[in-house]
Length: 253
Ligand code: G
Ligand code: G
Ligand code: MN
Ligand code: NA
Image (cartoon, rainbow, N blue to C red; front, top):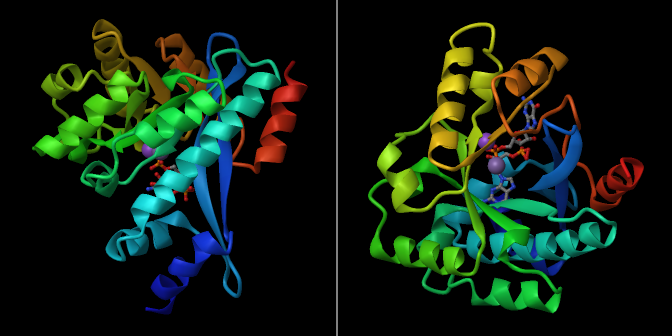
């Protein structure tokens, strides 16, 4: 497919851009984190969604350099946001399972980049899916441990949709659960009990919880009332350019 061929040029020709979706602390209502979401500005097709090109990049063996580039962009962005005065500001990056199965992915490059920017590991959180932890190979485990040792946090994305196991949350020393937006969309029904159960369990295990896909005031209020820590979604903002994101931070000062 032509798109897959074009992907090879995209990195070199700077067609990728990272957008940032704010994550709100539900206690204070302030932006304290963001999720980095990759966008591909294709020269003729315009914006191509990661839902389309990430699978192609995975097949083409290109996702490792792409995800690595996203993480480096995010590290530089954390440094800028902290300079704007947001202490403890953190950006979460989505990393393909292929990253963890790559021997080259030892985290040392990121640690060097972090220290170059005067940051420690807590500046970055890696979002992985439950599937990666299920039957994790020794290399996956070793890579996860390398990141934990560097102080980089680990979040489970789309939590509740995969094969959840309580055992692995402890085994892999996970920091954060991101409740899948399908449960948030269904807070009037079964989603409420599921969200509450996830939050109670997470807190008991010492994990924090981010609710995804928060689109209404009502959802925000319900999530806050059941003790959810953080939220992201269109109620607050979609993912925006670095410049627009920084302007939002300045505005909330
Ligand atoms: O907006 P959204 O269309 O941004 O994202 C669609 C999907 O693509 C999500 O599942 C998200 O996790 C994934 N995604 C977004 N950015 C990245 C990225 O930088 N790397 C990887 N591997 N996946 C990403
Ligand atoms: O799989 P992951 O959680 O990384 O995917 C993030 C995806 O969710 C992106 O495609 C992003 O654009 C989308 N998204 C972010 N906020 C909302 C929201 O409030 N509602 C919906 N429907 N999608 C959202
Ligand atoms: Mn994500
Ligand atoms: Na998600």
